[in-house]
Amino acid sequence: MVKRYECYEVKGDTAVLQKRHCPRCGPGVLMAEHKDRVACGKCGYTEFQK
Image (cartoon, rainbow, N blue to C red; front, side):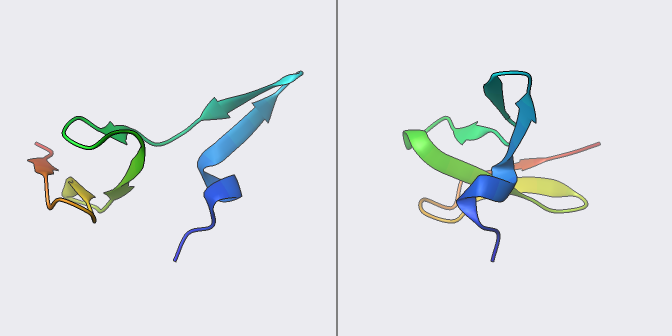
């Protein structure tokens, strides 16, 4: 399980989000990155990568 703080990168005085938000669930729900897809664990939304 990835900790929430591991999803951000600190650049100067700001924190930049490294992962995407789910388009169905909205802000606050991050998508899991797999080697061939990006998936939401809450609603099951999946985008396959080429």
